[in-house]
Length: 85
Image (cartoon, rainbow, N blue to C red; front, side, top):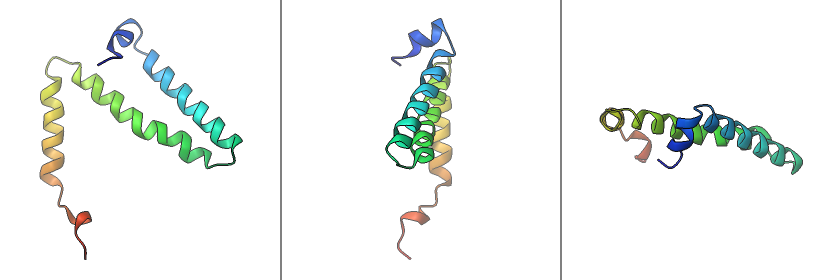
């Protein structure tokens, strides 16, 4: 929970930093003739759920909410994608 002190002072700061990082990644990928939408979107794809989980974890019963999400995912995962057909 390293970024929580920053979050307490300004709740928008982590999201502004995330948007800046995604924009910078998009611009660098565009300049290098890479796939800029995939590069910029990848930052958002990874960081938005991580920020959301950190915010949920910071609530008083946050650990149990996170455990409940993992239990629901594990209980409904069929494992079909890992089997060779």
